[in-house]
Image (cartoon, rainbow, N blue to C red; front, side, top):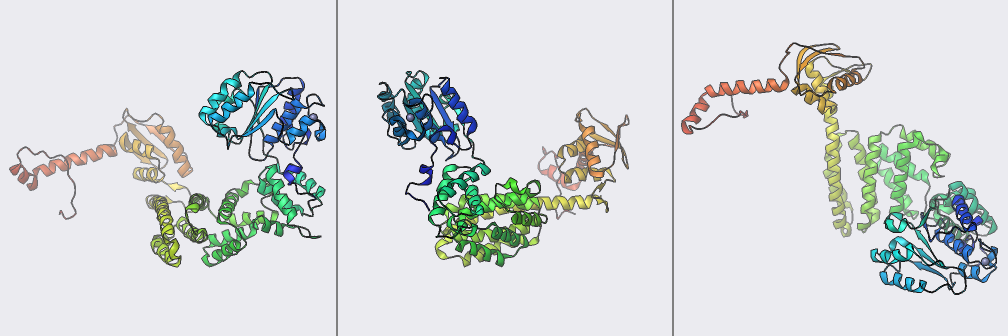
Length: 561
Ligand SMILES: [Zn+2]
C-alpha cells in the first residue's frame, strides 16, 4: 500500500539524469554538452505523453542553476535552487503551459520579463510545455528573442506535436526526440516501484499495465497507483482483478466473439458482447480492441508472441492463428474499414450500446457478402427489422447511421459484385485446367476476354485497336500491327500469357497484312450496315421529308424486325 498521499508519478519523478528511464542517449548527450559548456539557446523535446519531456526540462534547469554541483543537479535537491525548481517555484525558472496561454500577449509578458537578468541563479530559464499550442503571432513574437537571446536566457520547449511548430522556430532549437519506453524496460521499472510500495501485484497484471500505457511512464505509474489503491489486504492483485479495475477485458472473450461472427452465429455473438458490456467495457474501448484483434487476425502468420507487446498470451496467439486459417483477407480488410467508420460515428449516437449490437450484426452480414452469398441482397429487410427492435428514442440517430452504413454497404456490394462477375466471365470465356488453376487460351477472342477479365485494359486496347491477327495456334501467335502499337506490348503480353497459362508463348511479327483488327472490323461492319440502310425503305421515306438528312449511325431497336 502507498505510505503517503503523493501520487507515484510525482513521488518517483526522476530528479537527475541517471534516473531517467528509456532515454539513455538523450540524457548522455545533454549532460555531456552541459559539461563542456556547449549549451544551446533553446532545447526542444518531442515525444508522446508521459515519456519525460518536462522532467528532462527540469533536470536541465537544475543542472544549469544548481548552486552545489557544477553542470549537474545535486542529488536529493540539497540546494535551494534545485529544491525550488523541483517544486516549480523558482523565481528565475518560469514554467508556462502553452495550452492555457496561447496568445501573443502572454509571450510579450514573457519577453518583457526576460529583459532583466536572473535574480538568484546563473540562468533565467523559460520552460514552455505543449509549445505547439502557441498562436502564429505568439511564435512570431518569440522568434526575435529566440534568435539572439541574452546570454543568461535559455528556452526549453516540450511538445507532443512537432509538426505544428513553425520550421523557423524548430531550426533555432536543439531538438531531441524522446522515444516510447520499451515494454521490457517499463515492466522492470514498475515492478521495482510496486515492490518499494509493498504492492502485491502479479506479473501478468503488471504486464497489462505496461500494455495499456503504451510506452508512457506517467500512464504506467498512474495505473499502478490505481492498482495499489484497490488492492485488498494480503491478497494478490491478479490479472482478472486488474482487468476489472482498468475496464479492460480478457482477449479470449473477444476472440470467441470473432469466431462467432466468422461462423455467422448472431445469437452467440450478441451474448458475448452483452457479457463484455456488463463487465463495464465501453463501446470505444471495445472497438479499439476489436481493431487491434483484426490486425492480429490479418498478420498473425508473420508475428511472434513476444512481438505483440504483451498484448497476446500463448493461448490467445494460438487461437487466433487457428481461426485465421479459415478467414480470407478480403473479409478482414472489409471489417477493418467498417470498424473504423463505426468508431468515427460512435460519438454522434446517444445509445452507443445498441449501435454496437447493430455493428456486430452487420459484420455478420458483411461476412456473407464477401462469401458472395445471395443473402446480401436482402439486407434492406434486415435493417428495417432491426430498426423496429431498437428503441424509439434512438430511432433518429440510428437512421442517420443506418443511412450512411447502407451507403457504405451498397458501395461494397457493388465492388463485390464486380469481382463476382469478373470471376464468372473468366470462367465462361476460358476453360480452366482441372489440375492447376492456369487458364487455357484457345482463340484470339479467348485472349481478349481474358485481358478483360484480368483487368489488363491496356493489353485489351492494343489487341483490339492496333493488332492485326495473322495466325493463332496453341502457344504461337503471329501478328502484324500499325505504328501506334505500344512498344512494350509484346513484352507485356508474353509475360501475362506466361502468368495465365504457365507456358511460354511465341509472339512473332509478320509482314503479312493479317485480319482486320477488331476496331477495323467494327468500322467495316458499320460502313456495310450504313450502305445497306441507305438502300432501305425507311431511309428513303426520311429523305422524302428531309432532303438534307444524312445517315450517320444505326442503332438497333428491340421491336425492329
Ligand atoms: Zn542543487
